[in-house]
Image (cartoon, rainbow, N blue to C red; front, side):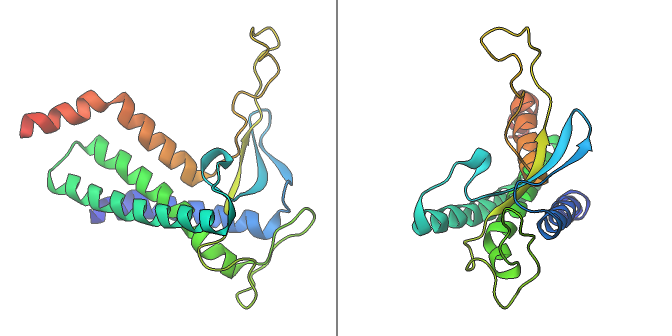
Length: 199
């Protein structure tokens, strides 16, 4: 467990948080900067809800969502510990560790950023403001910044020609969760058949 935390979870969390703090302190909402020309750009938004902007309405919805994230993160950590004790496939362990790191990364934003930073706005850059943050504990927004700029070729059918291939704006934590889930789905037979053989 310690090796996975030191070699995978902590580095991912560190990079995720450093980038989010940099964006929060240097970009206004909606500000865009090229990262990889023609492929990827920074575009700062704050996500009030879950992945792809899904949200539960109102203060109660926000508390429910953050509480769910916290409970899910604890559950994933317990599940990872159980898998390690059962000597599960190393690929499964790394995939679950990626999901765990991503979940924790987004929890940090939604749980504490509201108390650490002032409000980000259109034309307003946030600063560290512990005395007067922009939201109470557990009520902040998640910082997103990566945006793919590639578009479908104009000759594509079904009126998708010229549209963005992947319009959502995301962060490193989202990418870690997505990679972990996709890797489990693609390798589920290998990961779980080996577990059955050991039982």
